[in-house]
Length: 103
Image (cartoon, rainbow, N blue to C red):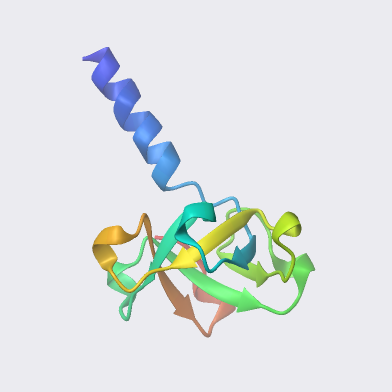
């Protein structure tokens, strides 16, 4: 039973950590840290994200992402997929900074 709990915890840690706030969009699925599916509905998302133009606003666990043009500067390299089944993170992009964060 204890082994089962450890496995579940490790899986959740691998799927849900959202400490990356500087993000780089890659064209190759093989080099991505996270494969993202963008949802149309907040209720389907694992995280609600607000895009900021200021690097200083992007804080760990805030859901506020800054898109960097340099791969080496990014906390996460992400690839956007059209298929929900392929994604390991479902994201809803909001226009309101106050809505950003984990669900």
